[in-house]
Image 1 (cartoon, rainbow, N blue to C red):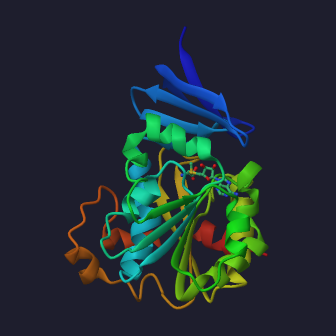
Image 2 (cartoon, protein in one colour):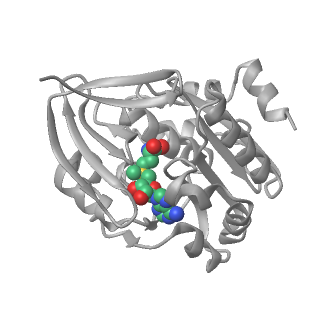
Length: 282
Ligand code: SAM
């Protein structure tokens, strides 16, 4: 019998991938965790039935969540990753020799264990000496930080279940406090296309804007995320992601990337009119 992974993107839209093998299925204290293998996408991680990553297209998400802030300020040394238990964001960060410290706060230790076992493509750099992993709620962790980080990356699940607190005003205010005076906050910003996702994105954007003088969104095409059209939030105390882009400096690092380049960096901030209207709506 054929097995399919199916995610409901709206009440009337479903997205399915044929599963060749179930590699892991279990329930942690926080969520259901599944790892599948598909001929088209390779290994797939889902949490509570929702798509987190596939081996085939994870490079798009991880390139965009890491290299956009790093090319804006290549002097970043201290980074906090919130969520990100699959390790893909940390993997990209460890490519910068200039980064001295990477703290990762993941609520669910099981996600890290399972990704280390089944998905080394993303989890392979979690043992880098600069990485320290804290297994706790990111919402609580940032409350305790002040003037500590140059960059915070929120690589979270959607705003339901354990990830809900990572979209609140309290959380963004504490991120502002945890950042140094020229700090940058990047977060996964959901999809603008279907209203159930767009509403959380609009709310999150509005809350971030209350704290950060520079607050923009940029986009990427991620085939396995709802609608394929995905946004990231870029908020900062001083850096503008276009005016301050250090194009030559970043290119001189010689990092090979499959999706990101500095031309695409500039273009990714050019967003469609309907998204601009959503972001400006009250
Ligand atoms: N790339 C993914 C996406 O956008 O779908 C996110 C990947 S990563 C696996 C998300 C991680 O955030 C999960 O491992 C989850 O356990 C973690 N997480 C959810 N809520 C959290 C919280 N409050 N504090 C820390 N980590 C959290």
